[in-house]
Image: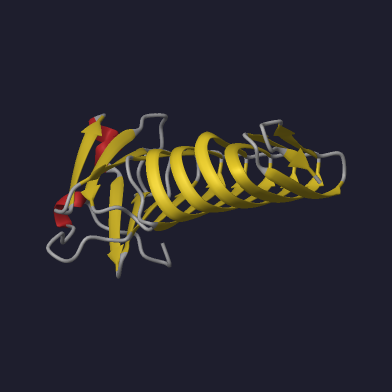
Length: 221
């Protein structure tokens, strides 16, 4: 990461403030649980755990692998206990599961992995998917800014959104719930489905489509 390789968990200094951002740069699994104290625990195959490396820079915790070790198909699970993260970053084929997010949050996915944040209650959520990765979320956000470039999927049908601004370039797809307003821009064959009575506006360049399932006051423009 930035030319740095990180250190084994046993050598990581956890005495400072908890990070605000977690970045996973491998195909392993990260589970973020709620807590005031910052701790990290490992589970899984010994080989997979031993090749993990950690890097703390400012408010960012990066989790990666020692590239000099044998890369087989085994995966480790990293459990991070910390206050609600402001940003999650996934690069590769890994998985991040977080049970909470800060009031104003960002989720960035590059690659084929999955990020899942269930039961969140936030003011604003900015999500970006580049590649074939996926993002799954439920709960409530007042504002959603979603961008998909490629074939990624945002499965947000159980996320109640006040106002949404969505851009898809490619064949990606998104589903969400809203009784507010949804503005969409689709370039390519992407698809967006909105459940509820939202007012929906779309700018379309290609074969993509925006579908707003009719509600009591729902309408497409």
